Length: 425
Ligand code: SAJ
Image 1 (cartoon, rainbow, N blue to C red):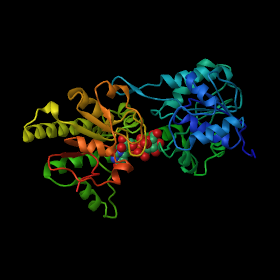
Image 2 (cartoon, rainbow, N blue to C red):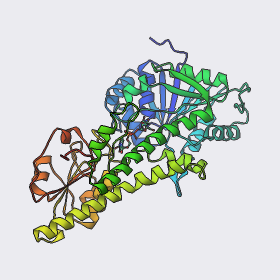
Image 3 (cartoon, helix red, strand yellow):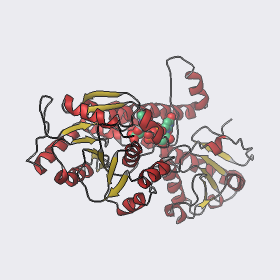
Image 4 (spheres, protein in one colour):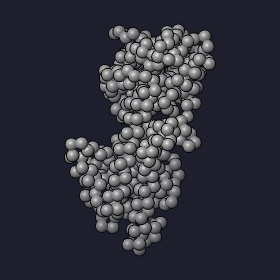
């Protein structure tokens, strides 16, 4: 049954955020036209399959395409609502790169009609929605776009950030509360109608700039908390204290909730978004910048620990450093996913493999084949038991369930470098 106030939605950008949103609208029997520049993605989606990894999304897309509610294309078409979900990476000195948003806006401008609503979902620096309106005004001088809260525009504009956790996107898309920042109250109202199609959580209305900043703030908050944990791990290493036990104990305090140290912060959001804040107010965003720097430095610290362990094994066993085997457990950017992109663990293994060619064994239960960047450096993909049996240095990088379930007995001649506190006593 289709009982929403929106009959057709065009989702521009069919990646990790856009495709789940497109499939979700379609699952509620809204006609969805998905737009992307990647022909492979278009062909895959139109055949009812997906080109990204996300639990349950394949079923949703397959049903949406088979039932005729989702269709993908490289060419924009008219729709009632446009949702833009393209990447916003940074370039050069952590400067936000808005070129994908600009390209998305130019591509839909010719098909816009009076009464449309455009919602920007891409994580964006403050002021991007207003910038988007400038581009739209240049491209379509015949249409009125909102410039201030009192305007009565032809096309409504709002910013509504996505907040879903990779690995739980399908559930979180429905359940999470969302922030909606319309340029005018009527813009917010139109955007609320669009998200009401599938969002069960609250839809919280504000202005566009606050909505933009809230998304950046959420990820910067998490980054700063992880940086605190990572800094603690360095201090505890120096003081010979088990940081994971320490955090567990401290977290018994009713108002303390420290996150977990690790090999660094990966993924496509938390390691990027805080820079947008730093870039917009560099002289005051000091803590946020420091958190980024602290987390960015963690992989190099872990590598240093592994190098020390290799040297120690070589000297205590009277073998050359080139004979030391290093087993690296986990390559993904976080636990229980197969996503290796922007992964600090992959980065660590890659850096070590360049230095110790042919000496590294990788264990990653979520993949069947190593990326060629590691294969080319002689890294072997092994199962857990073989890797433990063959290596001198055990490097724990990701707290995957498969590792957590084990408590291996290490030989006296093995050294453990545990960046996640999984196998420490
Ligand atoms: N990490 C730690 N210690 C922790 C928690 C995480 O080292 O205690 C590391 C992870 O291993 C990983 C990185 O941080 O390398 C990021 O992982 P994550 O699970 O914290 O977050 P993401 O990047 O998968 O998703 C985040 C989420 N943001 C917040 O939780 C505030 C998600 O809700 C956002 O939608 C997403 O960013 C996004 O797209 O912005």
